[in-house]
Length: 68
Image (cartoon, rainbow, N blue to C red; front, side):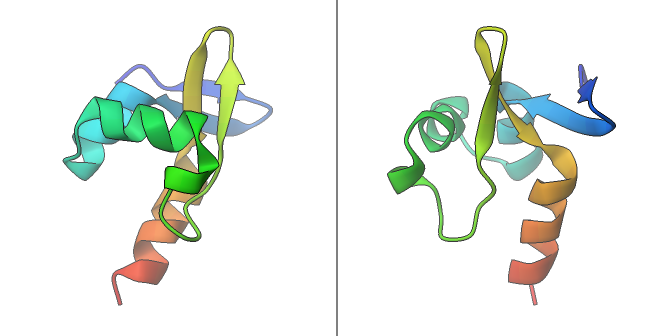
């Protein structure tokens, strides 16, 4: 996995997150670029260079809070 650290946070690419969550990468890209398509409470994406990325800790927190 090609995770990138930025300001002590780990960010994952949309393709990596899609693999982790078993979603199509295009779905994750849409969540990144269009907040209205993101599930309620799902963490926002940030653009690093020309790629959308998600904070891995925020995604893990979302998953743990919504899997109960």
